[in-house]
Length: 148
Image (cartoon, rainbow, N blue to C red; front, side):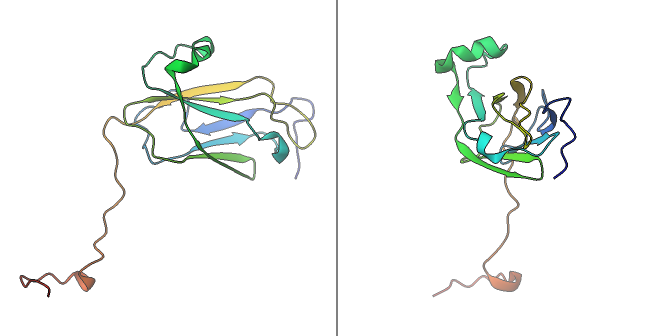
């Protein structure tokens, strides 16, 4: 649990999806990689994911009109400096999502995320489906007879 951020503070190293990325699969979650080990108790209410269903997002100030955005419900998990947000339902197609990390997040030595961290991405235009698997009939046997 080495934390090399004592002088620099806590920062976000990378996100998946990346900022401004498009054509994101609607079944994917969101991952944020931090520069230090996070104090898990500071993760409560630390991330908000907005769905921009009207396409009106043009910066942080536009988020103050919360009636123009849906908040995406989901679950958080954290391990090895990676925070994962898994939406409860697949994301909507052809939609912009805005992710806001509050600067209340701290690392294990008490260094706070320097600023709110905000990024946006767009989902794919056509929905991706999981790979289909034939589970019946067994062994791929197909006949012309009707089962009784």
